[in-house]
Length: 437
Image (tube, rainbow, N blue to C red):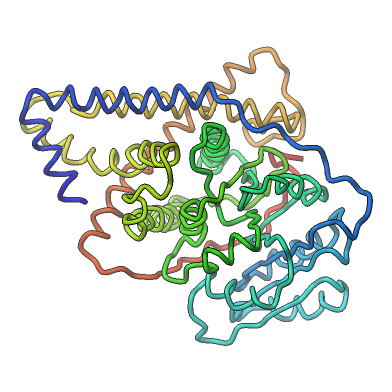
């Protein structure tokens, strides 16, 4: 694939029709983007009717935790005090060979909560997070499987709002919008806030158009029958959520995404931590295209999902990879950049998506975090300019994906497949200044 992209860029530069081919591709992507903007997301269902509690679906919550002493008690306290019948859900925390106080804390909490169950994995257990989830899945009994990271923070009405979504028979999973808990003036954190708003907005628009909804790991709810049909989680990938996304769609299940409620998590605060996290995301994201290319080429996804997947594959992976040869050739031959129209469209989509995404979040939450201060609603006057400014910064921040995807693609093309999980350290940031109250 790397050879095709690089040599193809050279060929397109060499012949006059190359520019027109790029323009045709840009038009195709632009038409799809316009259709997504005009699409109307599914209406939000009413809260779960608090009638007969025995009719509520049983939910199994799963959390894989490794050295999470800073956050695990807060998470368990939150999950065990949701507004949902205690006898209709269970919380499984999988201690993945922790070497800190995580096992001790969990042992103390089991005496406090009847629905809490703890599973200790021995040293040397394989499969990473996927292996931990697969090992405990047979012990669970929920009709719906919810997966959270150890730093997750959720609202008490979470289940009441998510369960009604599964009334759709073809819905295999729901991804709760991700939000940042440790809101501050840190430049990396502010960028991630805009990035998550962008992701949630385009996900909902893609789903409304019949495209692909994606799982994000933290705050995902999966129908048990759909998960069983897919064979559980793939232990040969470093991004279990992105891999499961493709397998669900290939088995004709849909994935929905919510604006509210949101699941809050800690954003990374340093460039090095962001680099490691996004390299893992990029590698796992690209790996699924390679792992499932045969069923995709056999048109197993259907026309609408295939078209949607193709557009975002071009924007997220092919364009960043092609930027390097495009720049080199343009400099050497004193020519303009070939992919400027497509790159410009990508920037416009980012600006629009972030602006409308931040606006949508504000409409739901009633407040918007501004320069690290989120507890007070902002005045309406001048708000469009504030949102546009934040979107502009967020788009600039998103440029970090260019070197990450380009370098990841090059590394994957010459090195054998490796499974290297780099843990994101959690410090126990609180959500008082978060974007969703």
